[in-house]
Length: 177
Image 1 (tube, rainbow, N blue to C red):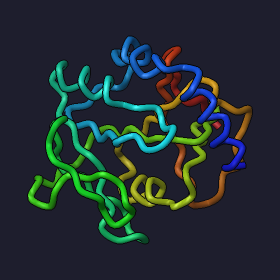
Image 2: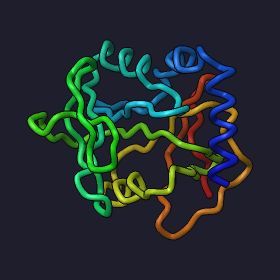
Image 3: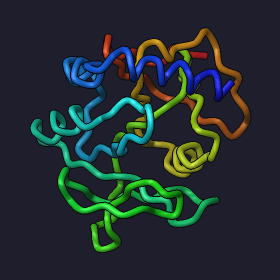
Image 4: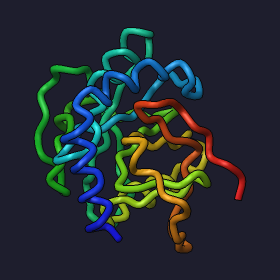
């Protein structure tokens, strides 16, 4: 399932070069937040950089996830676009250790696929699910291409549902299961 979802996402990344910019038009529909956790796009993930700039311009503070231990929830460090980054324990770009650790109100997460019920298919490492489980009150929003939507994803006991998904065609709140 992941291999197929990666192929779909790659095709959308190649065929929808302005998708990230178009998603910004729907940022006002996101639940309100003061501190927003974003991510640095890797591979064919939808690049949240235009959204980050818009949220920061609107007064939000940004932070990035940091993996310190592979089997633990991530922490978040304050980040301003342009700040230096270094690879964390998972090899993802992350703020340097001297950056302040913060608690986000909203976590924007990349995904391979999503459904209308808050189901999210990630890369399989469990980093976001462990983090969501450790922070049950945080707002969880997927960020991806509209074409990554599937009818229904199988959910396991450790999977934590999203509150909604933002794509280049709009924001959709998750439906009740």
